[in-house]
Length: 172
Image (cartoon, rainbow, N blue to C red; front, side, top):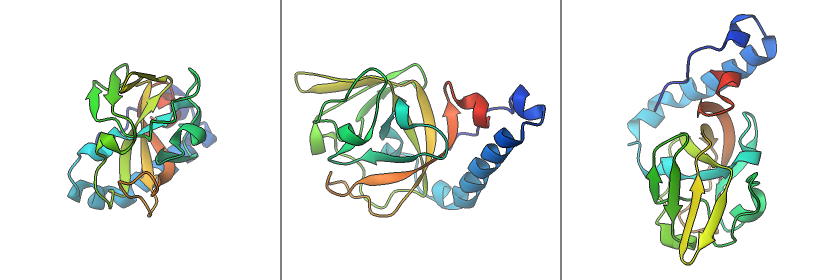
């Protein structure tokens, strides 16, 4: 698991709200760190959330049949065939990803680690059988039970931190 970025100037100046948010994020990450480190950092880091849903403290759906209805990429609606998992990722913030439609993306088996990194996309498009998107940020998500690799078993959780991207100042 990557470490959160350095503390922002605003946080050093004593903005209580920022410190409180950062404290919650760090507490969530620290509390789950030993369990998360026991699990290999693998495909669980290829889940995607829309950038309109990626604020710290927000409940997100990162996998499931209704991903396209429950996520709000700023570049417009995602195709219904996208279920929330990218099987090819290039880079991190500023990078991109591609995947196959539906369950063809081969998401990881359950259970997921207690905290995962999720890609944040502002644009999700489909051309032929290829679905692709950008990576505008990477967030930490504290996962809820219930996930399964079948899109009928949604993967949900709460955004607890930002690894990189435009919101990094808020927690980093």
